[in-house]
Amino acid sequence: MARCRLCRSERERTPAEIYLPAHRLPLCRKHFLSWFERYLERTIRTFRMFTRRERILVAVSGGKDSLTLWQALVNLGYEADGLFVYLGIEENSFSLLSRRAVEAMAERLGRPLHVVDMKSELGFTIPDLRRKTRKYCSMCGTVKRHYLNSLAKRLGYSVIVTGHNLDDEASSLLGNLLNWNLKYLSRKYPVLPAERGFVRKAKPLCRHYERDIRLYAELRRLPYLAESCPLSEEAIRPFYAELMDRLEERAPGTKLRFYLDYLRKALPLFAEHKEEFMERDLVVCERCGEPAVGSPCLVCRLREEFGGAGT
Image (cartoon, rainbow, N blue to C red; front, side, top):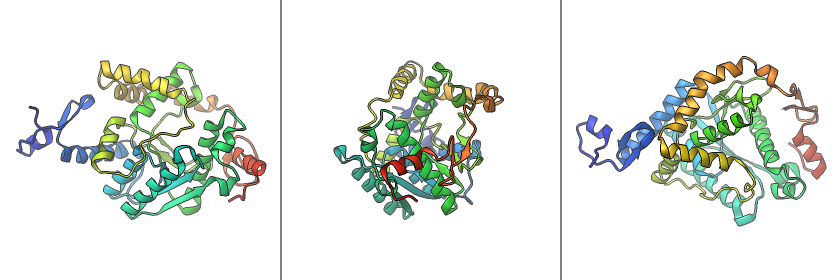
C-alpha cells in the first residue's frame, strides 16, 4: 500500500488515501488539505495576484469552487470578504439555497458578506430576462461583473477574485482556440490589472483541478450547494470540458500542461497585439460611471427597461 509522501518525509507511515495523478502525489487526508492551501499560496505568489495587505472581494455563488476559495484564503491569512448576487432563479429554489449556503459560509468564517438583490436593483430577475432573450446567460454574467466591479470600487477592495478552476480555464481555452477568439486569447491570464475603470481581477484556483476542489470542500465540510444553475443547459462549454476530460483520462496532467504551456509560450505572442484585437474601445457609462462598450451601458439600459430602483 502506498504511503503518504509528506508523512514519509516526516518519518511517519500513514497510508495514502488520496492520489493526485497529475502531480503523481499520494497523500493522506491531513496532508492533502495542507498541500491544497500551500499550492494555492504558490499560485498567488507565482502570478503576483495580491498580498496579505490588500482587501480581497470574493465572488461567491454558493458552489464548491467559490466557497473553497473563500475558506482557503481565510485559512492562509488573507482579508477576504464575499459578494453574492441574488439572481431570483426559483427553479428548484436555486437562488434561495445558494444564498443560504453563502450566508452559512460567511458566518462560519466570521467575514462580511455583501448581497446584491437583482430584483431590487434592476427590477427583474434572470428568469424574467430569459423570457425576453436567448442571450440571458451572457447578460447574467455582465450584470454580475458590473456589480462586482462597482461595489469593489465603492468599498475600497483592491482585487476581485473568482473561483474559476483549471478545468474551467482549460475548457474555455480549448473553445476559444477552436474559434480563434483573438480578443480572448490575448487576455487569458490569471490576473488582469486595474485599468480603464476596472478593479484588478484574479483566479487563484486556476491550477487546481475541479475534483481536488470538490474533495477539499467535502473534507472541510463546507456548506456548498452541489447543484449547478438550472438555466445554463444551453451553454456549449460542457462539450469542451468533456473533450478535455477524455484527454486527461488518457494522459493525466494534460489540462495543466495545456494551460501552463499556453501562458508561457503562446500568450506573449497574442498579448503583443491585444489592442488590435479589441472590437470596440471602452467608454464610461454616462449614468453609472462604469466602463462599458457603449453609453448607457447594458445594465443601465436593462434597469430603465424594467423600471429598477438603481444603485
